[in-house]
Image (cartoon, rainbow, N blue to C red; front, side):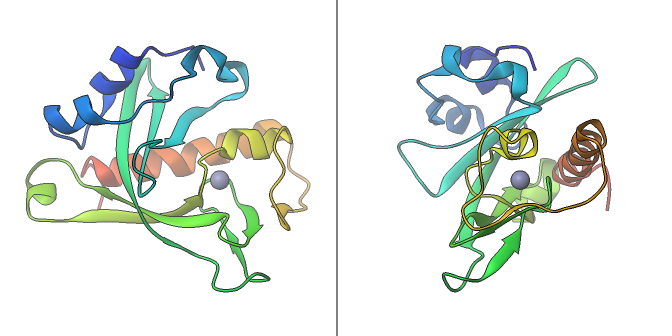
Length: 168
Ligand SMILES: [Zn+2]
């Protein structure tokens, strides 16, 4: 994806109040992100580890979502769990349940959407093999990288649609 600025990131968050978007902890090293290898930018809030964010580019527009890290999925050191976006398996807390408040009336009533994701939101890097999952890995299957990236994008868009209340 193309490099993003802090201002663009804050403006992209669809499920935050203006104040929350202003307070969101944006990565300090934005210029150093591996933009060419990213399908979306995801990060944990450096000042609040229970918060996470992801920003994707969709049809030329930026869509950002604030997430709350509900729990680590792995119960024991050897327990494996899988990211529902990129299907990378991890052990030892490498996958976390992230929940996003839905937009609009649904969100005001407290509705959120939960999804298991790579705890560091680095799906793009696991898929390309530039970051390795501890004790896990990308599942062995005969799909090309392009196909895996397309599948991850589809999974992400389904999630974004749920947050934006465009799908059930
Ligand atoms: Zn992932």
